[in-house]
Length: 635
Image 1 (cartoon, rainbow, N blue to C red):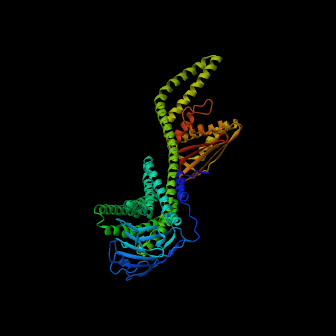
Image 2: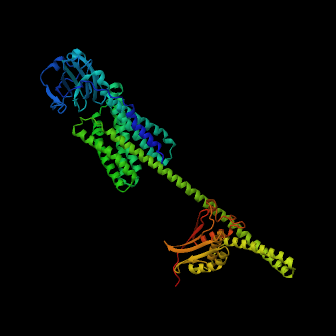
Image 3: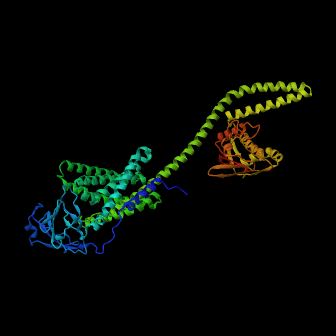
């Protein structure tokens, strides 16, 4: 069973944190909160909140309003308005401490009056215009008219959802529970994104772009969730401007980070439209940041221009970006890209909420607060984390494979270096040693012909050892200079018929049998004597590996422009260590073997542009597989 990647575990824990830490729901009271679905509304001509009682008590201009039709037509482009709500009489059976709960009120200056008494006053000097108000009421306030004076600097004003009255202490936690949940969820993502950014210096460069872009997506998503919630503006109003600026900056960083991660996740560098989209998003986000700095410096003198580019235009840009990313990821998913399938699934949830809410937002003249988007983004972030985890797993697998290939290459390089050194040594020494040996052999042969029986025996031993030394030197010369002076087209069936004739008696002595199955129409190019020398060494080793009889099978066939020859025995076999050292000088599994014969065989096959590999298992025999370029039959 495979272990779960740590990054997925962290993602799962982060996803559960809000559910673990969210405050418990308050049990419902016998009498639930009483909603107000209707109220009175009128436009105000005065802009300051210090309006006289005559203005709010004037019966002229009041219009019926409700959640379905919250704001009547504004013919004079007024920026302030009055709202009048008739409070029900106090009922001791329903409330100990009644409270007024307004879930959504648009404006920048808000004054609330219970009769003639001012009970609430708030003013914001920044652009965030959503008020969420929980207001305790006195018993003497009940049964009176409640007046709300609103002044706005944006194009939104008034109530746009039902308001209600309920038990203040019991309903307070329930009223702010959603906002607390947003803080916990957003704070968890901010913490996780920050930890990822802190870990980024320890990554290699190939993963750095994906890791940092994903970290920024997670970090900015959490920041936007926190700063979009009314909670910090309600309880930390003095930091409202900072929260709003932080939200805008997070959005301007989120979009290019999102584009960059998708480009890296889907190898978007191969898709020109992805690259162009990412460059445009980066440029437009930089432009929006410059507008934000300009407004900060000028005291938001150009706030209307800022709103146009960062609200209206940016919304359209986001819609286009989402649609484009959906199209590209869906195309990759159809082509079988698993990362694209995961990305498309997460992005479908994100896009469904993002596009749907953006369309709904503009369809309702921006009098709608986006709240589903954070769940879509969370699903998308989880998909991102899964994709990045898969990338890390694949990179780790590639590193392991490359390490194995490097070890194999290093082993081949060491062997090649050994062969080169041995070749140079053999070429320089063999000729010098061979001549004295031949002279010595000649004199010993003369002495044996003139000696008595016992000295003849010793001289015979000396001649045999000289012949053995001469054979070793011959092998050295063959290895050092395996020239193919007489190259011709060889029919393998004829060559192996000769080899079988030479080695069959030796196999019979060992209790074995040689079986050859080679078609007559198989040809290679090479030197006949060298080819026989190479395969005599291979087959001879197979014969010597037979312990209590057995068979040696030799067969060949053409394929992919090559002739493949198999030599397989039923001998004792070799372990992995012995198999890896085949062809090294002075390595042999035989007691008196020098290893030079197989070394020469490797060299001959290499010179004939062939390849050789061995397969063996202890106790299950050995198989040699040799490949030569195929040759056309001679005319």
